[in-house]
Image 1 (cartoon, rainbow, N blue to C red):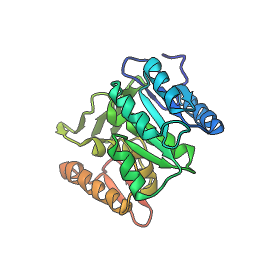
Image 2 (cartoon, rainbow, N blue to C red):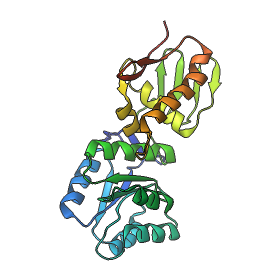
Image 3 (tube, rainbow, N blue to C red):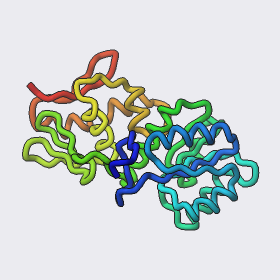
Length: 244
């Protein structure tokens, strides 16, 4: 495990590399995505058609699928339906040029887990894939110590336990991912856009307000147990730091 280039800090729960299947009929884009994901330390396979994707998925058994909706033979929604029918239950991120609200709803209600529209930034796409893996609990931290500490606040990335002092804190999956991101960046101001890119799996109207809402949830559960740790930097974003 030590000889792997694990830039993302994520590995499979059995200690192996994360397996990703990229499905897109644009070869140049597939190659670019493959390069970026291999840099994360993940094992990547690519397919350019829907039928090839289904065949490869059955043999490769990917943990995660990046799937273009517009393919030359069958569309991505049909591919996903067949993958689910074959027992693939891992996260699927749709990749498409379509960006209407109707398209987003169609993709996400077809048991897809995320939706990114072209053009996109590689950093954003990789961040979303990391988030999907963490929320699905198919991956764990590759670092020897999975615990993150900020003051008396403790978070374990493997057991998903959170405590402040001697008191356990129960969080939802989204609250946990938000807190993890804050704690991995202590004393650093994170903008709402940065938080959305790393924590949430798709864009929607009122996106800024959802960050404010979940920050308030965390404050009720964490800051209620002692001096405030989560701070608002007005006009910029949020940060976490040990209480004085």
